[in-house]
Image (cartoon, rainbow, N blue to C red; front, top):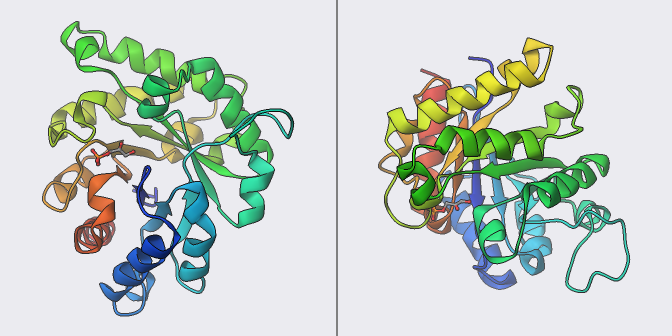
Length: 264
Ligand code: 13P
């Protein structure tokens, strides 16, 4: 498999600047120097702290292989959007990634497929890489419409994104019922949806390279105990991790599972 595994921590609204810098120190301590100092094929490792923690974390990760991302971005370049942050502002901080369309944004802040698409286009235009989140609710799974919902969300998010731009797009499948609940999707459930997303990419883009190269992460109660099994699935190319990313030893175990999978 040529896709590089991506292990991304979404800190959500946790850790101020001092605590965030300490978390990075503790994470690096798990590896001696940093995760990249191990031999062999390396996964990409990313942490996504809150906006106000970004600069402290960027300073603390300098010189290591850890990358830093934000958790949201506005689509306008500037203007009267109180409380929002533009892609250029993010880029200026030094982040390389931004998470877009997380289910918590959709659920609590009125994010729609259309605004997810607008944010995504603005982030790509500014030279940021994006992790766009999709996922069904428990009700939707029980009603048997999981695949239809995922297809609608992926199509909506990727409207007007051409094949070339897709090199900077990562998709995260995060079933809403598995987020923060401890109820992880089974390996088979996750693999089934990931395979459908890849099949949809084949339909959406003429060049098969898009489906072959786009990384699709799993998120939702991924932890030190279940990561290896999930990462072993053929269409799961990494994880978007909430709770376990706040625990250095657990996050390090997940990163090590990614190393093992890449060098298996
Ligand atoms: P948990 O790993 O805490 O379930 O959160 C997943 C998530 O929402 C990552 O974006």
